Length: 267
Image 1 (cartoon, one colour):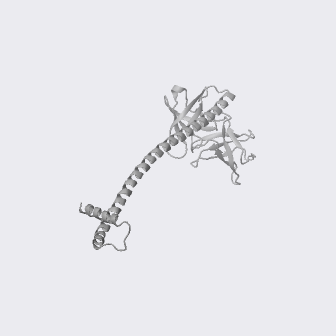
Image 2 (image 1 turned 45 degrees about the horizontal axis):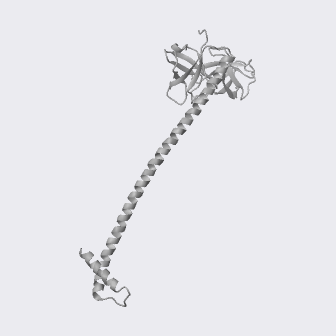
Image 3 (image 1 turned 120 degrees about the horizontal axis):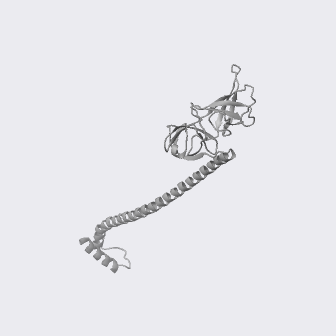
């Protein structure tokens, strides 16, 4: 109250002398010395409060904007996921359609489509489980494939599930023939590296890198299914047989849906 009273007096005195004087009076000078520091403190305090309030409102505004942006990002992420799923499903349907064409061209009437529900630990699909079994007509040793080519065979069957071992498993072997010349036949086996290694029965077989291999039909696998292509040909003088390294056409790091051909008779 004292400060307010003195301030009012100072304002009145300053109003009277608004025209400007060469020299202020001693009381005015003393009052000015007392009031100016107080005004300075009050002015700076007011500015600080103003900045704090302004920062608080700014923070709240930014927080609201961030919430809006987060919701927009979530919506965009959902759209990306939906588009990815749609694309993957379309690719799977196209793959199964290609497998269906194989079945029709080869007069295969007994077939089942299934989805993978689980796999062994590791990057590769050496062994996996599907959601089809005896109730869907699956039998042991049925050929498993997709639109790309040969995957493997069924080795265990339950009522509504089955287990599949793929051709890249080191316990698997497949009899093949060279697509370019079906007189060249041989056997390939899986490996821990996810590739196929094998040999040709005829040591003089004229095979080249890039030659495609298909199932020969001499083993339990259906005939004419694409296996892969030769990526390396090895001929050692101390070995009678010509060995090859084969790159599978199927991507054994990413599998989802499969096509199972069930022969009418199985051993």
